[in-house]
Amino acid sequence: MAEPTVRVSGIVLSSLMFQHGNTDSDAEGLVLGESRVEEQITISDSQADRINIQEIYYVQKHIACNKLNHFYSGAGEVNSVAVQKLLADNKQDSVLGWYRQRRNSDQQLSFRERIVHQSLKASLRNPHLLFLLLTPHRASSAESTHRTEYCAYISRNSVFLSVPLLVNNLGLQEPQSYWKLPVGRPSERYSATIRRHSSSFFSSDGLLRDVNDVNAMNDSLQEELQAACREVEDSERQLETLQSEVSALRKRSRERRKKSEAAGRTGEEEEDQRRNLRLQEAVGALFKRSPLFLTQTLTLQGFPVPERTFSGEEEEEEEEEEAVCEEDEAECEEEEAEAVCEEETQENTHSRKRRREMAASSERKRRKSES
Amino acid sequence: MAVSAVHLESDAFLVCMNHALSTEKEEVMGLCIGEAEPARIVHIHSVIILRRSDKRKDRVEISPEQLSAASTEAERLADMTGRPMRVVGWYHSHPHITVWPSHVDVRTQAMYQMLDQCFVGLIFSCFIEDKNTKTGRVLYTCFQSVQKGSEYERVEIPIHVVPREAIGKVCLESAVELPKILCQEEQDTYRKIHSLAHLDPVTKIHNGSVFTKNLCSQMSAVSGPLLQWLEDRLEQNKQSIVELQLEKERLLRELAAP
Image 1 (tube, one colour):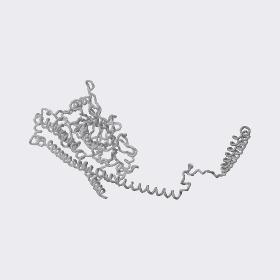
Image 2 (cartoon, helix red, strand yellow):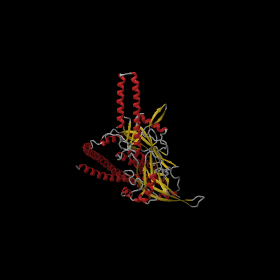
Image 3 (spheres, rainbow over the protein chains, first blue to last red):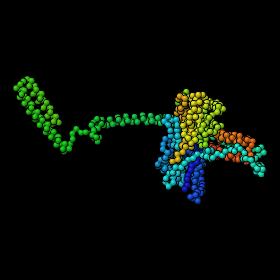
Image 4 (tube, rainbow over the protein chains, first blue to last red):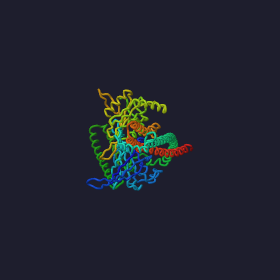
């Protein structure tokens, strides 16, 4: 059974964390490198021949996306053109997978990441595509301690398997120690044989040729590192200068756009105001006496509430109301007559005045019910 | 507590993390260069990788000569940047063990604090793996020491990685110093062994092979990937420069238009 392992150098893993440290949001991109399959044959007492297949993926570099969701849509569909543009001069074959870094979240794939992964797998036609997930967290409430977890994932039969992400380092191999004591008391023939071949190992100054050669090779490598460091340093300074120039230009451009928008808006607003005033005058002139132009009570449906209603039932109600009014009026007249009789027996002048007032009141009521 | 927080610039963080991840067999260490503000915030602008003369597994110690050399380097940086730089702290790694400082670390920190109250300690814990979930982990912490009776105790100091998209010159130089230091350590060890007079040729050949093997490990595990990373970074920067140049021209045209 194949056991996959992902290996990464310390500088690449540190560089991934460095990239994320420079952004407020999540970070993502592609990882490139090479893969190898190794067979290990083991023989044990129970089994004569056991073959262990090891898949080793070496992550050698990463390409960061400038913005999130750059090479896939909201539905997780990968945009092949965007992926090719991201790769630039790098070969598609060297793509091992993609990565994402998200703060304070669980170390497990989200639903969208699964969709994107399957889509990218199909797009790149790479059934062994990897997904690297790094999740930094604040490990203490005092913010004195921080933790980053990382793991690689590979999809096998639609199931995502965790693959250990191991950092290549100097401690991986067992260190061999230097011998400080001589071999022992050698025989004459042994010493003579060694002496005969020594000249091919040692140079004239008594130093080992291999040691001289490896030192020379290492010195050359150090010079290349220094030269590369100077080139990168120049490019970093050039980039810094350009970034600050472009930021200043962007700011000026934004301010200029804001000013012209504001000026445009002010002109538009004034024109709107003038138009509104003219419209109001025109409406006022045309519909001055229209009841629609006056304040009125409206129903919930937005229709004005009329003073009279004219349905059949309502007519009957109206007639009943009128009849009630007439009855009330007749009762009033009776009451008035009684009052008049009572009053005639009790008071003279005052009662006549009162009678006249009551008569006027009943006349008003009658007129009101008629209208 | 003399320090309220530590701001570690991201390029310095890159160098520290790369150094910590260079070996899982022993602790590595270095010094932090920066400045301390009146508001008790310590800014770390760069780091100096140190050689370990005594590669014991359980302790790291900085010699007075190393501290002195680091102070000279800090003065050089101060002249270069025009800012008051000095040695403001130390860092070391804890491979396969907890991020918390040991009692030795806490005492060492207390000793440095006697010279400078604002001196801080950083620890990077790496090569931690959860066998069940196959998840790897790195942690880093910042601390100072406070005396409690006859003992010292750790005090947590908030630490924030400050974004810095462009990598500083000093940090780049520190990064490429690592393979040089590793090679110098190996050459010193080999030279001491090779200078022993009583060794026979076979022993010398064996020791030469060990030296060759160790140097090859350094080249493949450290120098090679570092050179690859520098080349990739250069490529990436060149691309960004082209894009920014185009944007600059477009913005200038836009601003020149009436």
